[in-house]
Image (cartoon, rainbow, N blue to C red; front, top):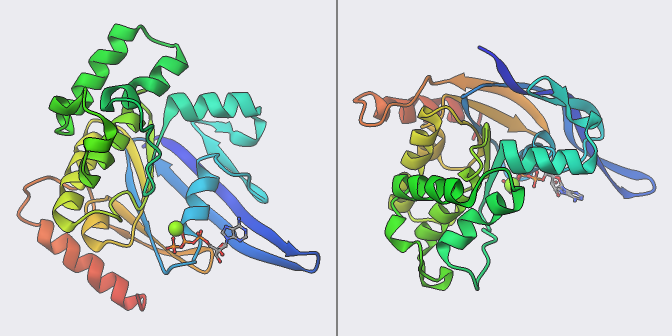
Length: 255
Ligand SMILES: Nc1ncnc2c1ncn2[C@@H]1O[C@H](COP(=O)(O)OP(=O)(O)OP(=O)(O)O)[C@@H](O)[C@H]1O
Ligand SMILES: [Mg+2]
């Protein structure tokens, strides 16, 4: 299958003082295929968020390269890079930055209006479709302050999807939610993935990671192993086994 995103010998260091450099990511090689759903797990401080920021072009690598759809991100100017992020990538994070004085719908469509690639009616139709899929269609005109944590996370997902990205990046997108809301959000993400959007997710939650196709394990800035689970199918009888396999694998890793 075609590769969408690739990290080659990706390293990231921070200069903490003139004689102290911290090597956070060390020669990481990862390939994400078109439409693939990959999770990253590992101990706190192992470099998962840093990896996500660097492979998505949000932060600058120290050495190595990142290739998106055949093009090296280092060859992009700042403007080209932000256009790429706006049009081809979606981001969902734990601390959702939504605008308080806009309605839910306005929060979702804002980046698409900014991109100025499609007509407003096209954008509004896309917003309706993804809000329907995420179960928040009836909240379109509500104020952001009236929404629950789970609803806000759905708004963040819709906002990330409004420009039809090739890939969605998530850093603990279910971290602040109770298990029922987290599970509903994961079903939405699995559904989005079924329609062809690749997903790269950082999570501590076994139930969340068990819905991805492949799980990478990171220790001390290196990807040390991976577990292939195959595509998740909602309602499949074998889904419980995925969680058991993942839990066993993680405990072998001492996690
Ligand atoms: N801007 C920075 N300057 C210096 N060090 C940093 C910076 N950002 C991250 N680090 C360090 O890099 C290491 C990895 O951090 P990172 O946030 O990527 O870990 P993580 O695996 O996402 O952890 P968690 O599971 O707790 O979110 C940590 O030791 C952190 O202190
Ligand atoms: Mg993190």
